Image 1: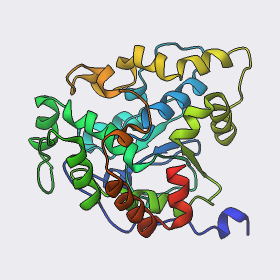
Image 2: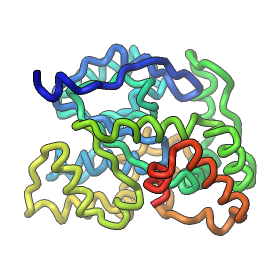
Image 3: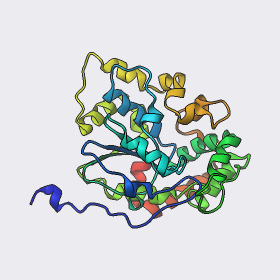
Length: 299
């Protein structure tokens, strides 16, 4: 019996539905041996890693429709009967996006999984920009299309601090649980087909992290092309070319695609959160994740 046969692979134990999610689409996906799944909570570097994988797979292409090539599979719009045939028709190496926790996902030994973590305080400040700049078309797509389960998503308060405190008190409201997302992926970090990345490490050493991803995905790097790959994965290049990597070219946000790819900075929360706010977050992180995972997430 080989190592793969002895490994205890995660199994799906529930479905998640809300204004964004329809996790049932994973039940019908036929995995391929070289599939890549890019997973995050949200606003943790998902688009960044999608861009990295796209550039590694297609190093000669400058303008890649990354959002189209790498769809968010469990987003419920368009519905699964529209989205799944498009995914099945892809002939390139597939790299799919998910925001699900592990136990709501169909996990395949065939695929390779990249999970990106980011300090929750930075996540919320980025999430607030995403939510506050969403336009009427965004709300209509999430709230008014058939298939929504549960309450609609409303507009955010004017105060980003109030938004953070509500998100912390209600664990991810009005989106989905932050702690369970991080906790479930951290729990399987030792599996041979899972690689944990961190937003702060991508910022600190982008070339090194691109090489680490390439090794994990077994994609050879042509050194002559590598400088261009790094350039096209920089935040500056991505923001200047944001319509290629943002869903629908940014049509759901005021200011377009450049609003979706906002600042890419960490630590903005330090200017607005009180000491008591920070202590509440740190206490929750330790209680929900354990000390080791909380330290990794905070970096």
